Length: 214
Ligand SMILES: O=P(O)(O)OP(=O)(O)OP(=O)(O)OC[C@H]1O[C@@H](n2cnc3c(O)ncnc32)[C@H](O)[C@@H]1O
Image (cartoon, rainbow, N blue to C red; front, top):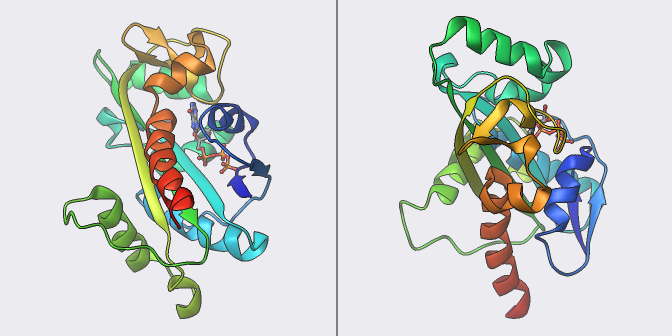
């Protein structure tokens, strides 16, 4: 059984459309370490969630990175949504930045089942570079850090616009991709182009190979 670790029901809706086989949400609030990138946060979360669950886990860390704000709110997206709110992020961008207010959604999925993985033969494989960065950035005890984690990243570019649409969650109403906000898309349509959809597709391919041919 694979546990998709999140407290966010919006993420679960999207992920369950992609993941095959036995998957269940694990509503577990892992510690979000402070880091400038999503990789170390997701990797740390996956190790902690694996320790908690004792079963294979997939952690999903995501955020909105606004180019003109040097990537802010990025890893702080959740805190900013809870404090300022999504519409304030749009108002701030409109006040401070010229149009088009370019931004990207990023998602990092971190898989951990306590076992080792073969290193990728491609030295420029971004996933493995991020894993290395994640290891370096962690402050946990040595035994915990030694548990391998595999990362899968997805990103999508768009622009910050006044809120439109009722679907989705979080920053979806203010993120426009090719003329449509994510909150104007069904979850199928969003998955087909989104940061999470892209990361899930990479994970799904890797996981199917791993489980079919152990
Ligand atoms: O950590 P978990 O429990 O998974 O739940 P969370 O909602 O806090 O998850 P993140 O830290 O990954 O999310 C950071 C913020 O980005 C938002 N977010 C993440 N993915 C999103 C998406 O696909 N569309 C819109 N907003 C998203 C989300 O609502 C949070 O405010």
